[in-house]
Length: 151
Length: 439
Image 1 (tube, chains in turn brown, red):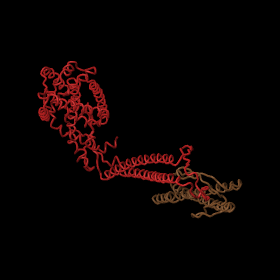
Image 2: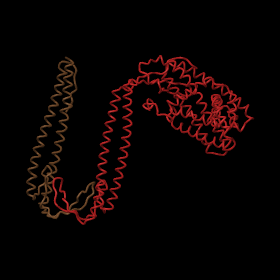
Image 3: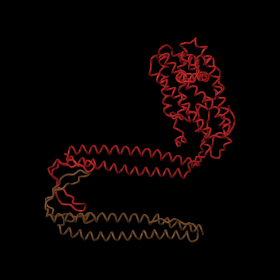
Image 4: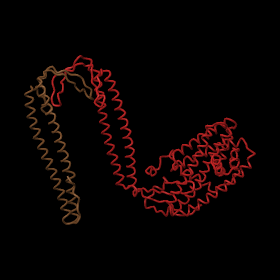
């Protein structure tokens, strides 16, 4: 009986360590990626709005050639902008079209973030549940008490 | 000198380094190694980027402008073109930028490349270390799994201590090998080592004295050598104190052997004392009849004599000590060649060598007393009569060598020497694995 309990506890712990925790880590990483995307698009939106506000039609900027070596670049016409729409495709937009696309894109990203947050919460809840189960398994019949991890 | 008792211990290697632990250690080192490998790959990537950039920077000024897509944030770009193609803004670090031409930029990038190269080299060196470590752990794990045992024997005398882990056949025996079987072998060996140590000490002392004599005779006014001489005195004193320390350590560690050691230590001391007395007398006797040949003989001998101490003692004494021995040796080599050039024919040296082979033990005994008197010359507390005799006479040692008493344990000495050099000399053979672990 004791052996059985021991085996059960070990199985639970393995489930937490091998399944739930890696899942949690990868979910958090995914969410961070989406956050990054969101930041990129919000920056782009702000920049385009700036261009619009100042009605800049030509632009001089510095291009990073790599390893923090910059060179001047000239943009003769800023009214046409190529925006990354995903999967390596870029679409030529005017400013208003671009802003429209960006707002839709931001909405979508926000939804994704929400999704990931929920996923993370549920994984954390499962971990807690399993630990609670282990604690019960050990505590009720035996006098031993297990320090449960705090999340 | 020989009293049979159980000395030394037989320890299964697996009890000191459990197999799992060794394997775990090996695994950890492997992990560190792969980490380093990744780091190396990353740095190599940087280097590739850097060379590409150098090519680009060199090529860009060839045209007045290049049509490119100008990035606008990470997700968008404009069609545009590069202008001012010979003006680069290069990051110097800490947020400082400099306007540079293409050529200057290439120079900067080359310097960056060099820094990266050195980084690669250092990572590679580290990886090499890790690899050596990993192979060592693997070997240990395997050996522990095979049931290898370590046999260690504590060795105590008033002058030195030597730990001999016989790397040969004994170590290979299985862990079932009992300590009782060991006893006789170890006793014999112990006795041999004791006698050997006595002699070695005396040899060292003799070597020092020889140097002194050489200086007096041949290199008068050579201050550099005199300096060395006093150095040697210091070294000797330090060595002695070190040896005492070791002895005490071992005494503490080896409780059950205490009685034996006391007895043996005393006898050893007595022997030496009587030797010294003898020596002093003979010194005076031979005071008057120095022969040129003696010098040569002595020097050739000295060459041989000065070597053994290095091999056997370097383990125990600090590094500077062994360095000093090397000095000594160099010096004696020098003086020997000088002599042959000067006055003596090769034949004499050779024959004296041959003689020496058989006479060696006695010679050592004779010489034994010399060093103490030599110490006196620079340090207080030694017989004045001896000092004067020795300082004025270079040749006496040799004379005595021919007439001196025969040492009982001389036959055993050769074998023990070999064993010791095998197991303990760093130079001739890779260090015993067990010692390496401990250091």
